[in-house]
Image 1 (cartoon, rainbow, N blue to C red):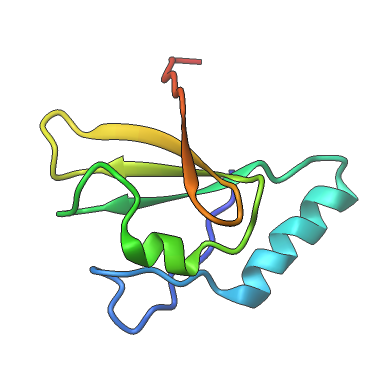
Image 2: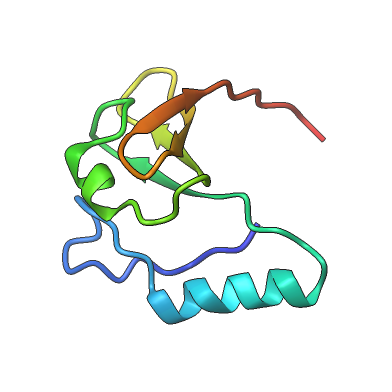
Length: 97
């Protein structure tokens, strides 16, 4: 897992991945024989579903977007695949390694 900075003007309420850092992660994955399979972010006070902003910002069809809703008790972790038009929910299993 690689972390990419949230460079949004209001990072507590929205996110914007640093474009250069995101592409560097893709380059690193390719150079090491790995594959980027998705992205993750949280909704600290938001719902356990992808928001309208998430839909507007989504730009990687076929990748999984993992969402942690921290407002829920206990917190909820869900995965969604971006089709290029909408998000389709995926099953998520959390396990200890």
